[in-house]
Image 1 (spheres, helix red, strand yellow):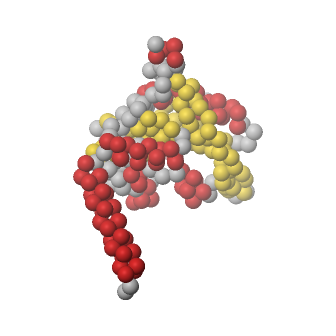
Image 2 (image 1 turned 120 degrees about the horizontal axis):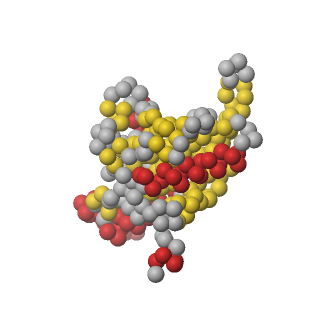
Image 3 (image 1 turned 90 degrees about the horizontal axis):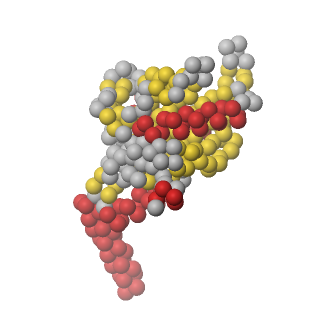
Length: 250
């Protein structure tokens, strides 16, 4: 081995050592942040009716004229995500029969609990026809604009007569941590890394999502109802809020 090769090897080993020491230091000083959603001592169950977690996210039982029921966490989800993940999962039905699903995935010490939803959607047969970042106006604890990502979905299913028909859906999601809100997965990852570097705090990000399936031609009506539901339900379980209008900050 010539002199140049030895220098390259020594530099590489030094970088590995420095990196390992840095990561070890970060892990030693790491502490979990405060969730941006309410967590309660209420168990949540899996499909086998066994307790999947002793805590859960406190999604409200009733929102506007919607009643709800808790849904079990799918086995594939429990097998795939880390054991310290906390869930909230409810199916809401309005008095006229309109239904939507609202669920929350809250990470613990393992950041892999949260990922981009596009992978799961396409894996379950949905096609994403469009993606748009928008906002939902929230009135409590003060008026602010909640950033959300809206996905327009479509998939082919068989109806009761065995015919293949197109089902459409709207999927709205965002991420929330302690005093932090974003609809952008890349920004969430940047903030997570930034907070770890600056303070050693691993923020406990939550992934909040609402999905509704509907018949073609009902897009505007369904989207309006979903936004009304989100505006009414978010203050009941989400602790983080966006900035108040300038007039309220004075």
